[in-house]
Amino acid sequence: MSLRRIVTFGAALVAASAAVTGCAPAPEGAGDAVADGCVRMVTNSGGLEDRSFNQSSWEGLQLAEDELGVEAEALVSTSETDLAPNVRQAVDSGCALVVTVGWELAEATLAESEANPEVSFAIVDETVDAANVKPVVFDTAQASFLAGYLAAGVSRTGVVATFGGGNQPPVTLFMDGFVDGVAKYNEVHGGDVRVLGWNKEEQDGSFTGDFEDINKGKVLAEGFIDQGADVILPVAGQVGEGAAAAAIEHGSTSVIWVDSDGYETLPAEFRPVLLTSVLKNTQQAMVEIVGAVQDGSFTSDPYVGTLENGGVEIAPYHDLESLVAPGLQGEIEGLRQAIIAGELVVESPSAP
Image 1 (cartoon, rainbow, N blue to C red):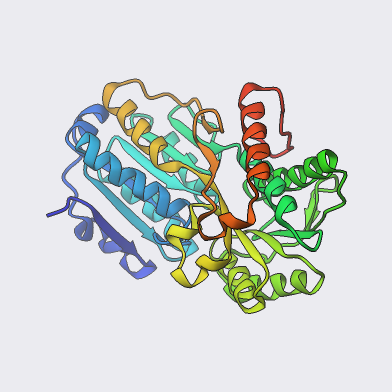
Image 2 (image 1 turned 90 degrees about the horizontal axis):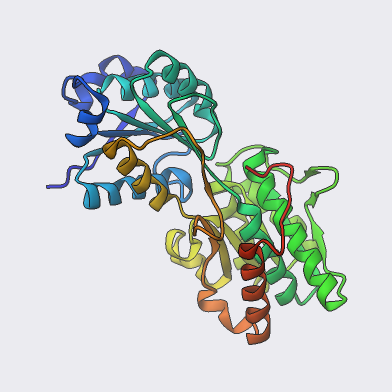
């Protein structure tokens, strides 16, 4: 029987949460807690199967179960009111490591870390400045630069687009890299591919205002398609599925997914329009952090995912590889190596 447990806390269940989780009493030392097999993760309101950070972080803790012998448990937040109580419950479990996911949990993570200095915390895709909190962040502009170059290289209309769920650094970092990748393609090839949806200089563009309403993503994507966009990068969590649905209906538009490989995580019906994905490889970061807590080497120094350490990358082209000419693939690989070597620096005001 698997040790993995998932606990969903609605507002009405918080008072009874200790009984639901069935956690053992808090051990005497934080290191002993993890050695005994204890790590807790708190999701944001996107849920555990968000095809984004909640899902990939949980997958990483599942790997830690297999590789390091810990017991992982996820506390799933279903609304904003669940966030702080779930972090508190995770701390009360007595585990040495609490993982929280996303900017929504920053305030609760900071409060609990200050109140519980003996507990180690990791927060994914957000930065919290505390001695016992390790930010897990990603320089996604590096990988989305490659995706932008790719998009410009395969576009037949000379128009591509991007949009976000909200104007926040983890979102706009993707968009900055994407725009710069298109600009690099234009520079190399003397092209004039345009990007709809984001102005890097003004740091302003198109946003749906949330990460869950798929219809908003579809409406926005349809507007871009009407303006000629044939490659779209949605940086909006589940909302991005709306862009994929619009691409399917249109028939000649492709989508670049983010965070996870959309070809593997999205419904199979979207595979025909998935060009690639800009990946944040959270899984290995989780394994490394659990191991560091176990062996006493945990620090609050941020984990920054890059192309060099494999923390960010673009996914295979899967069913659409025929659209990517061998020469274009070679150019993208050359850019990857130039970024890793420091010969090409991708800049963004949102860089970690």
